[in-house]
Amino acid sequence: MFSPTLRLSFRSTNLILNCRRSICGIIEPHISIIELFKSTINTLGSTYDLNSHTSLNPYNIVNDSKLSNEFIVNVPPVSPSTSLTFHDSNDSNDSKYHPLTYPIASQNELTLSLLFDPEALNSSPKVCTTQHGGGFELLSDDLDSYVLRLITYFDLKEPEEEKTIDSINLYNAHQLKQGKPEYVSGEIKKFEKYGHSKYAALRVGPFKDIYERLSIEKYLKKSTELDILSSAEVCNGKFGSASNFLFYSRMLKCLPNREDECRDAGRNVIKTNWGVASLGVHFESEFKEVEELAGLEMGLGEFWGKVKDSESEQANKDEEQTPRDKAIEAGRNLLDDVAFKGGDWESCRADLRSIYKEGGMNAIADFI
Image 1 (cartoon, helix red, strand yellow):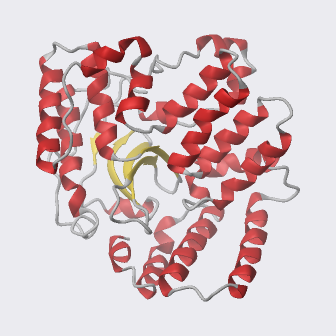
Image 2 (cartoon, helix red, strand yellow):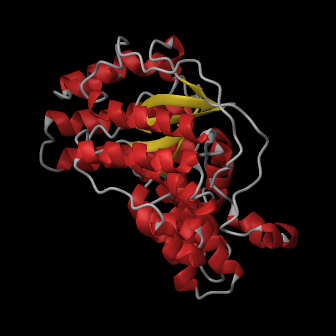
């Protein structure tokens, strides 16, 4: 979901590569898609409204007739015109973001970033929004899909415009260099009756906000419970973030006789590989609701501590972990601990680097 009216102002029109994080091996393979992202937005003169990606609360929507009547899945929310500022790779403030993120561009308080998985550095990084001292919200599987979603929106709405044609040519030139499939201009017209959001979900890639909106739309149309929950379950499988499980728990709360499943989904928030910071940009504000959904009689942080103690005891009984496995687990625990203490990401970077170095994970250690 995005607004096609947002105009840009650039801090820098070229990506500078002399920053310690920019020259890291895990960033270099993604320089071309970052450049394509910038060029595409520059060509279109428009960008996504990052606020429209914020996780929805279905319980509020379905229990408010006004919100329900206004909720239409294929219509992006209207937002005020604002600017997008690209990050200079020499920005010293980048250390205040979550350590696994690489900021690309900011829009008001939100920052579009790449998100790296320490266990899968050979895979494309996810795309998320974040902010200084905040958590992050997963948006899409990779930046390629994120760019194509924007391009296909304009190919549907303004196919004859020069900027649309130029953006498609830019995308296809990039795809050709990467040996990847090109986008055929006008393809989206074949799916026009389904709307852009459903086209993007079916043909472009998984997008968290689209799956959530589809699930709510099915509820409002009185679909079967299986159909309502299917979109949320697919989203869990694609992203597996704390925010996904929070949405799933919220969706279950809307349905009758789903109390146990609602509670279990709420408790899974602390068990994801992405950690509790993946509850969203303002992750701490979600703690109280998670505690209620999960049926906890203690704070979420205390519950997390008890679960980790239990897991640690079990790990000691199992076969000895490899140094890499230990580093991955220790890194997750450190990031969760920092999240529960307020998200001072800058303060934990040295310890996190040491943990990954000890596990032989030098690439992610150098990045951090």
